[in-house]
Length: 435
Image (cartoon, rainbow, N blue to C red):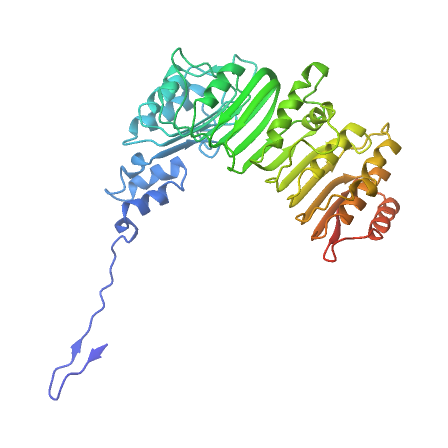
């Protein structure tokens, strides 16, 4: 390219420099760090050969995740001792604060080699700690006392280990989320831990064994997922936080007897509280509520409840249907309702149908209900009357999705034809059928 000046001037060449500089290396450090944290530890370490600037950059990452993605290739074929030594070498090379540490390998069993890893991590200002160990025949892994010295922890996620704090330990006062999966812990220790974590927002518990007592007392709790059995429990949450509560279990997993009816009373107190916004109950807790024998509306309405999910409800069992009835009658602001049915060949019919008689629902109108999803519907008389009722008392309903249990074409057609003929209070309601 040439540029011509005035008369008699000599033509000049304009050259365009072709830069070969490393554009990525000149990016701000926080951008480079964000790039590295998206890589596996192996790939991040390989960047050390790019240039002198990159040589030790991966050793300053604030998070280290040793998961199944890490355990691949030659690492996957290593023995437990060699695997732990590899992880320990990575920790020894690490520089600066380590805010997040994850050790979650599919084949990781309880072993003493985990202790020095936790000891090292406890000295780095760790804020998020995750340890998942495979449940096996060996003695479960007992957490070392060094973990309980990490008082700055904000997120703790454990699986298949023994949680037994040393004397004098009370709680992680800055903890925001706690997740315990198949962790051996006493009810008193768990309750004390929760109540002494004033900032706790999320609580996840899953255990195949039962405990005598669980106390959930927290001013900031917003999420509770519980798949455990407790003979008694106490829940106290500050009003106005919009809590999501999920009590999980299966028909074979948990059971209740007459001596555990106090469970239903305590659960009722929780569910009646206006703080609950999202509520999901599996069969054991539906049965628990039924055991209380409450009739009509619950003592207080759940004005804040907008989402209700009930699993494995047998529409042929009067007590279970009564529980469904009580929930609906006491939730005036419900927006979404999800129920998965359970079929029983010995279920009653006539006494249950009366619970959905339209004359007994003249004072109820679900003015906020927009979405209904029903699963495993068999087309029994009780189920059909329940659907008829929902369509009749939901003037703002927009969609109702029904998953039919039967695979027979003739039976499915019978159900569809009957449902289409039901009167709908909402002119916008659309009924769909899914497989």
